Amino acid sequence: MTIDPKVSFYFGVWTSILLLIASGGISFDGVLPAAYVPLITKWCAILGAVNSTILTAANGYSSSKTGPLASSATAAVVNVLLAAFALSLIFLAPSGAHA
Image (cartoon, rainbow, N blue to C red; front, top):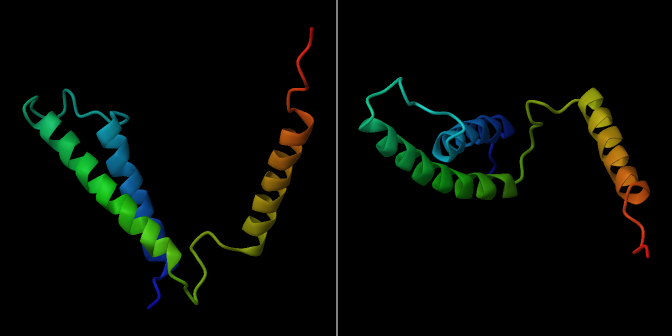
């Protein structure tokens, strides 16, 4: 069984939106009746947790297709960013204790 990377990508975006609502990053105060806000927030937390588990499993499956953001230019940028991050850890790491 394979999962199309586009499905996993868009499912991940949806899961992120649910978790933003659950954490209060997106608020419905003043938009919806006050009685509905805790109910929606709680359901987003439940669905976000379930979706997160499904998304983790979906990423474990192999696919013969490339993802929606995969290209040679994107791969080059990601490699440069990873190298810069690794070098910053090496050169900006705090040295030993000073007296």
